[in-house]
Image (cartoon, rainbow, N blue to C red; front, side, top):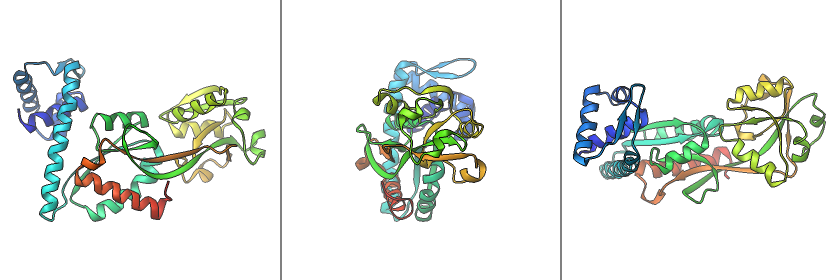
Length: 298
């Protein structure tokens, strides 16, 4: 068993195919196929099922995939420790990011500071819903993820805090209020933003023994904003999820704070920050510093 075989196995699992994995790794498809076959023969187990449309990982393969990622993660940490000892800063940093809050509001400033100090570190960013990011961290697919805190399953670094706000058409009766309540919002046609926001909003109404009158469920922010702008419903979103150009692009939308206010904290999650590779620990340190000086600490 070699590290190369494990790297290829992990890439095949993530890309769900031999061809796409080969392209990502810069090797031939036959080399990928040979590596997987050799690994399966050595383990005397089937790791993947070869289907016409895609490759799926077997149940045993899923368990061994976690082991493979753990081994490769420790190997990467050893390489980075050795590089740091030689006065070098090289390696790979894998980041999981969700939605506009992290991808548009937090990451650019943090990455700018990180790249200035560690230009030799390769950064790989995967984007998805916040639930997916948490699963990627748990599965060791990424080294660090942005997430809504708290989360007792992981080591965490708080970064910023914002609040949930109601988005209303300018001519809506509730737009005349300084603040709005969940009870008032529950009486209106509601647009439920998916891709993670619903996991915040639905429990909020449920805790108040209320149920929003959901007219639409949308995963794309641009669609949610257009629907509110057109007067097709109202919604609730975190402030940091809103585009900076909202007033210019959607002048008919007004924002009203909830009463009582509902705060949201966003930060970084790690499986084990103390045992993480130097590139990962450096990212946590820089992200904390950028949040403190530029973004407003949580």
